[in-house]
Length: 448
Ligand SMILES: C[S@@+](CC[C@H](N)C(=O)[O-])C[C@H]1O[C@@H](n2cnc3c(N)ncnc32)[C@H](O)[C@@H]1O
Image 1: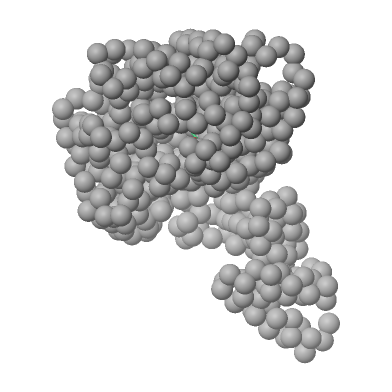
Image 2: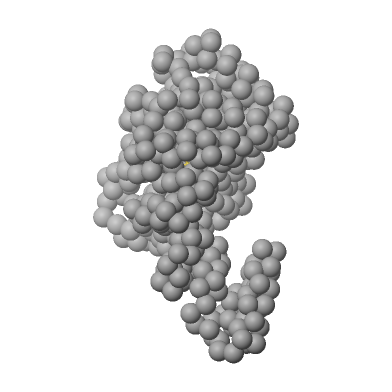
């Protein structure tokens, strides 16, 4: 290739990078592809075309292209680091670690790669090594916000909540509007509590932390809601939509791995009810998975469904649900509004670990009854409130979820026109080593 055409290719590449940085993905992609037609072994074009593929959700292509770039230029540290990031996001943790370690050999002063290594080692449950990598990053760059945040997360997972709090404090000092650090700091304060209830000392500390979060971010719906929950404000009848969206959009990435650690059993319990009550799957029902999240219930519901619909407020949770390829339809919607728009539509409606974000269930259960076809079934989980002296029949807890009493649920279900109402106690998950007891509530409409 002549020097002249080499120069033209490099000019095209730099133009493509500018477009890529400006978010003009389609134009950048076309330029990378045209470079590769002229020079199939251009490592930069391979790497960044791979990067674009990952950004548009095609991680397989990203990995293939990045690997090719590295094969051509084995010391291409940016490509190796990005390959590590793709591997981390696709949970290929061993490969991700290898990539980061190779970058450290090539670029020992690259702070971000120590911080990424801290994350991958945490996911591999090698907490001490993860903390070491995170400490290296924060030592090398004491103003590196993400470094402090990642190190805090590793201390938190290793249950060293005091050190975790210090790291989050540092991250907040660097950027007072960095919500994830506020959120994690508040959660870590809860975890400091040794008792099974929130002591006055922890309660006060939590209130101060949430107040500070709100001072830094006055419009933060999550901080406002959580502060009300901790203060025990009586008039909150459900979590606002903005809170649900924000909580689950940020939770989506790690939702399943976190729940795995909590021994989360709700989909399994709901699946068992469906199997026992509906018999052999006939794939004949219209089924709604309300608050479907990442779709953990889908494999259990699909065999019964002629059409399986999932509805959820969180777009990030829906992205994960979509990847399962089990739903016939996934809708980003608020459940009460969605049910109101779909009278007499479903044979089975499921709410797995969703109604704990509602206190007052009157409206949603009424709408569920209307959204079911004749003799249709509903099955849902709630957290069990055993203190039946609770006049309202439900209570909002400092962790931001509601629990409900049996008398409240029984009365509500019959008011809505349900028959064959059953409430069965079950362990839903474990939290800080303790069992969370709930109720699996099932009923049938219009069959009495
Ligand atoms: C704890 S997750 C459970 C997800 C799934 N059902 C499972 O068992 O894995 C609760 C889900 O309910 C959704 N959710 C809560 N309130 C909602 C509402 N009012 N409308 C729609 N989705 C809601 C959340 O976005 C979240 O994805």
